[in-house]
Image (cartoon, rainbow, N blue to C red; front, side, top):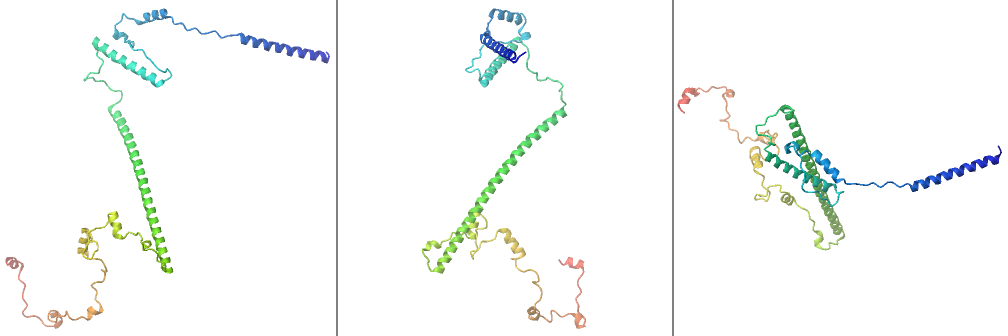
Length: 289
């Protein structure tokens, strides 16, 4: 077979494939999906409902309730509104069912003396209750700890602000003092108001912070509190305590308090006291009291 014959066969195959593709496109464009028909067969549905309704039975055996109020929704896509309507419809059905049970004389509430054996034992339920109480207490403790952490953070922040304020005030006072020294050296005193430095004294700080006793003695010094006064009366007013009763050179040389008659002792003189008075006995001393 020659090369021309091979070329002819390839061109024929390409033409046939193109024709088949065009035919397939035409057939797809001509195919139309059948339209779905929604038919409400009311007669058939009513017959089926009548068949399964079983109206010959009493209501307590059927327990069917048909809502008298249809559900009306503004937007069917609103899930919250739709669920609320279903809830209202179910609540209305429960109330109507209760009325039917009362009318039929059927009890539906648990009697006061009702007794039934529980699935779980009392000890098991007590453990469950204790576990729930522990969980609740843990939650409360965690909240309280969180609150305390927040309070500590707030207190620390206030403390840092106070410390920064004191440092700024101290720095400003030192700057003023440096400025005053420079002016004094140069002889330029300037205005007298520039020499005013806002420095709180100890009494001012105590009055601001609430510390210290504001009662003052005659000398102007603050009086100590009652506890300090009692300790001062009992133990003294401070100062050196050790070695206060030791002799010194002056005290050893001082003979003003020496009395020969009082300090005379028979053990040193070598003589005995002939007129020594005997001490009365215990019974005699008690009678004389």
